[in-house]
Length: 250
Length: 311
Ligand SMILES: Nc1ncnc2c1ncn2[C@@H]1O[C@H](COP(=O)(O)OP(=O)(O)O)[C@@H](O)[C@H]1O
Ligand SMILES: [Mg+2]
Image (cartoon, rainbow over the protein chains, first blue to last red):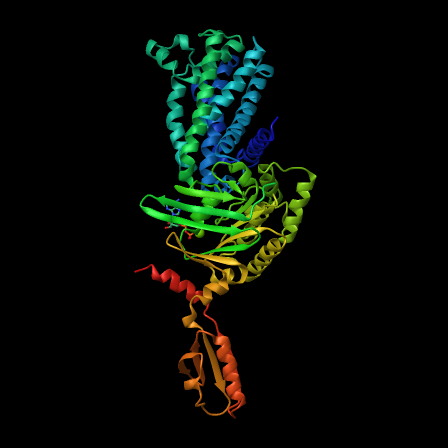
């Protein structure tokens, strides 16, 4: 491996490690990354007379979506405000390295929380697993996908985390409603079914239902391909947008 | 290893923020091994210049070479050789002193026992070793500023950029930091020091660029800068008994001013004038009370250079 690549990987890991130490316990991240999706889920699920284990795919979908995309919106504006970002830019770490490091921190966060939920669902509530490989790849892909999405939000060149949080909720909430999280896509009205195709969360939940043996709407390969495309797009757009807007943060 | 004579070469560097030309087509060299001062009033464009030299953002136009590398093309190689203490304090408040330095080290690809030891040595130099496991949150402004310097030094930079490193600090911290700057320079580190403190520039710097409104008004050693403004050099003398009658036709004296019991004689060559005065006093019975040459203060030079452009 070339020395430069080794250095870059080391830098990305260092940034992710720093983010984890500092930001995982920040109240806004806990509120919007964990409490908010939990409450949203309860508001929908309670009193619906569906066995809990059948709600696990929806819960996982919501949690992946909100957890992964809550970290980025906090880190970059916060570091703009505290001027630690400027300090970082003087090091041999590039803008891309910084952004990828932040995405990685959000990825770990999302993977950790959703892994915990999946584990609890399977071992405590007895949710069956039909395909463990699909389950794991979905958690993995979706965590990257929504970590990227959150980091797209944070490219808004502001130094106030609340601005980005607001923007991100404005976009994230409607997405949840068109994604077949609580009601399977097949049971949505026709316009809902069409809209749902534009949301990456649709494919994530569909994959999760498949993996947990609760039926599916799209073919497995379609789900995986489209989710991969969303993921790559989000990651690319996140890095490119930040490279454009970083200069406005100084 | 890259061989180079000039640690920093800047050619026609400019940067505008909207209508405001913050840095206006400046060019200069920083010799290897010197302490180079960037002196100017607030808003002169010092920080903007440092940001371009340290890769925070690129200039609108111009070229920058750092340690022989083109900063814009060979960014990584150039940045590996510099250490930077930016103007605003900015260690991570939620990390400990040691964590902050080790994180910096990792950005330079440095880790392991040796680096940890170096980090502790640095903390020791700045009297922070016993606080190594405390979060920066709990540090005073002076301690935070020292942290910034520790973080800038972990990669043993060949060139150290310091943007107002002592501004707003108490006398002791300022003294400590200035001494450390001198030590580092003795050890071979080239220092690029930005300050609005004339006294600091005068004491520390081998050469000074005086910046004003985005332009460099002058670059030279502090002594040469002062000597450029010969008109303000003088000799001040007072006598024990009576008033002398030889002052009027003394060679080297351009003009005379009486101030209280002292006479101030303006001259292009105050050294020669002082000798002449002493000779005269010896051969008279006036008796010398005090005599001193008054060089132009760097402050005067500074005011003069930064005022000229105002009209
Ligand atoms: N990011 C920025 N956006 C707009 N104007 C800026 C920015 N940074 C600096 N300036 C302006 O550029 C000028 C030079 O600023 P600066 O380089 O910080 O001066 P100094 O460090 O010498 O005090 C000032 O007028 C300042 O207001
Ligand atoms: Mg400044």
